[in-house]
Image (cartoon, rainbow, N blue to C red; front, side, top):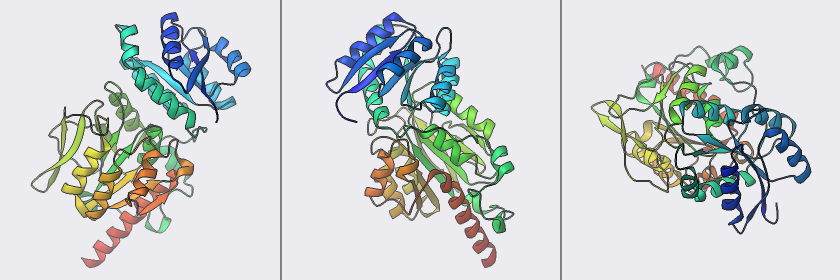
Amino acid sequence: MSGKIRVIVVDDSALVRSLLSEIINRQADMECIGTANDPLIAREMIRERNPDVITLDVEMPRMDGIDFLGRLMRLRPMPVVMISTLTERGAEVTMKALELGAVDFVAKPRVGLAGGLNELAVQIVDKIRVAAAAHVRRMPARSSAAEVQADGGPALAPAANASTPLGRLSTEKLLCIGASTGGTEAIREVLVRMPADSPAIVITQHMPPGFTTSFAARLNSLCQITVKEAVNGERILPGHAYIAPGGRQFYLARSGANYVAVVDDGPPVNRHKPSVEVLFKSAAAVVGRNAYGIMLTGMGADGAAAMREMRDAGSYNYVQDEASCIVFGMPREAIAHGAADEVLPLTQIAPALIARLRGSTERLHYRI
């Protein structure tokens, strides 16, 4: 892509269209080439003007944003940044939009819209820049553990080990996942393949307050393991995945032989709250060689240095490869820091991890 990033703004609010256009046109590297107040008008505008990115309101007249996005990603996949509302309904719809292939989203305020959007200007244009460079593709059809088990396929662990329970090992090991842009679907792809007796999983996905509850609930409905938002002071249990609440820092501590969640209002790290760096650094200190690290798609370098600390402490780390990433930033930085033991396509990460865990279990049983 050369020249300025060409953006079309699709929103039923004249005020939002005006504000977003102004924010975009203030940037030296982008321009708003059109606005539309509903998806049907936007459809013709996209055909005529061929934008690099569109911003799309979640709830629209005549055809809502989700229906429009689904059709767009089937017929003409392109980078989309969703404009969401800070409501429970808005969060649920946003999760659906990310499932359909939207690159990212911005949560607009419910009150003080003009001032609120201007305060978010840096975030908005950063997300547009990331979207313009993202690898947009159709999402895989499989979405649940039941569907994965039903169709089998090459991504499952080898049949010879399929009946081996993880058992005692799952109480000793702990899996740590970090992700950002494109990460909601990447995390789903990993979690739906984890068995019910999986070691505990802790996750930091860059996400603002108000959205991680819906994200956790959606994953919980799809997975064999239990998925929930992390709560300060709770014990980290096998067969569970814990997601950092939006706008809070999440890290690990010990209480005797147990791992415990710490969720607090600490400052942003690497501009992020929650931060992958915070979670991974605690894993290096608290879990050490019993940890497995997984770095998935995302912009920037958050977590890369701490993932190297994990490896230095004895963890075994998986990093998503460039071809399967929406944005290769965080994985690239992890590799550059020497943090990766294996670099794999997204669909191969969970099977490789499970095979390694089962192999460790078999060696443990053999020693006993």
